[in-house]
Length: 141
Ligand SMILES: [Zn+2]
Image (spheres, rainbow, N blue to C red):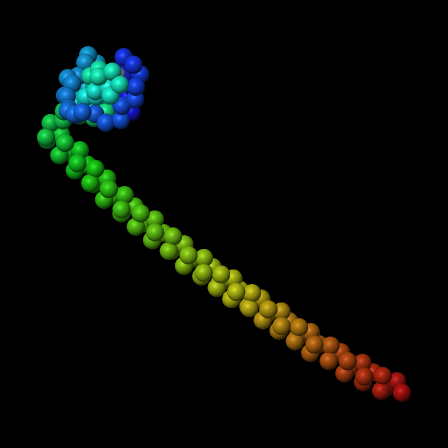
């Protein structure tokens, strides 16, 4: 909401709006479109303009714009491919993790089986020892 430059009264609605195209000043590129609102102070009647918004336009050759658009769409395509590959890699990683888990479980089972057969051998050995000792004891009687 602009203020009246004469009396400072706030005005909310312009009496009319229009656009002006402003040529670039030195060192600037492109054109600027300014939307200007004309206000009439409801207090003192002063008419004054205010810039409502600005939009800058760069002049680009059609061929160049086409090239930029083509490059942009190929970058987008590349991005999509990359995303798909990343997703594929994440899936592979999950599969790998679960097969590592399975392998670790299988290893643990093998380790326990080995331990079990070692214990069975030891029990057998102890039974044999026991038998021999019992024989020795019976000879001593
Ligand atoms: Zn005024």
